[in-house]
Length: 113
Image 1 (cartoon, rainbow, N blue to C red):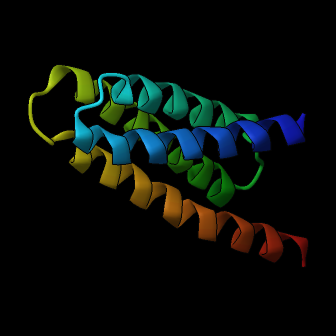
Image 2: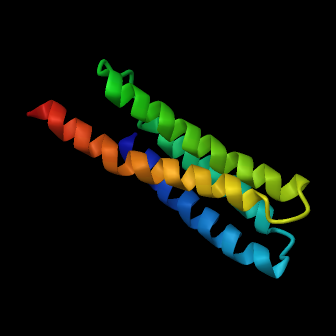
């Protein structure tokens, strides 16, 4: 199961990157690719979500889910907004994901000691 969630996260991240970079060319399928990739990425993130006893890890997992939701929301904004406002939402989601990507392993290592 853990390998499936890891695979979904990687495939989703590649689809997000490709969809966002091709969106500038006005390719009609870029928002669809971005949205499907963001859903795969969020499913991969949720697969690692375990009921944590530690308050700090639980808070970090919730922040991770908020980051994944912000990335999905930026895909929706690609469809409904005319300009590049979706980039703001994508940046917020990416910052949350980056922060939790460093903090969760640090807290898990601290907990093991």
